[in-house]
Length: 109
Length: 114
Image (cartoon, rainbow over all chains, first blue to last red; front, side, top):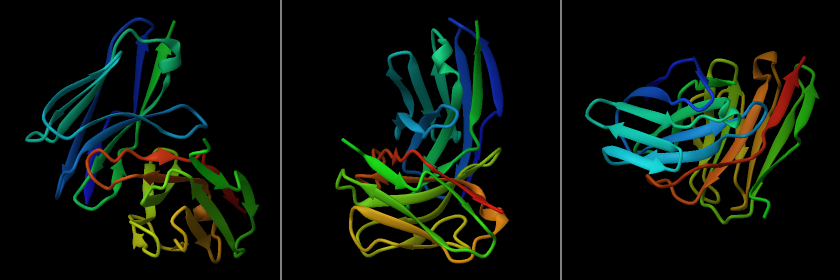
């Protein structure tokens, strides 16, 4: 099974940087995913990591360390529209994704 | 391009009633999933399917049944609804079950059981 931990809430100022950490324990590892979910909407895919290191996609970057069971999502140049819940998810050797409880990010003007 | 479509979007049931949620995808994806989302608990997997005619249990399968008679459809049934099944239900599909297989989600179905 999976045990996925991420902070419940984070607050940051528009234009700043926020880092959302995720730790996981799994019996098998086959990828780590980040999703964004605005209130009342469906989750949308942001990024995935399967190898150690940093993946950059515009203002969003995701990092993975498999040996430490650790990932983070970095949001740069925060905008008001980035206020949302960010979900960390791990795929194990079965073709299914297990999600953390999500981190609600509030961006203040 | 519809993607993943769920019906109905909203439903109110009385305890003991039955209902079926329909998920349809037009992306020819092999894998389909049903999750429920409750405040503070994130998305929890109910059942999933790795192809037409297959189903498998997820993390919280009790009280639910599923069927995948056609590749594009994945049905979630509640035989006797309970207040504990009040939740938002999300269907998702993916092309592959491997590392790059991102999930595409439907818009969700909000179910209230009184």
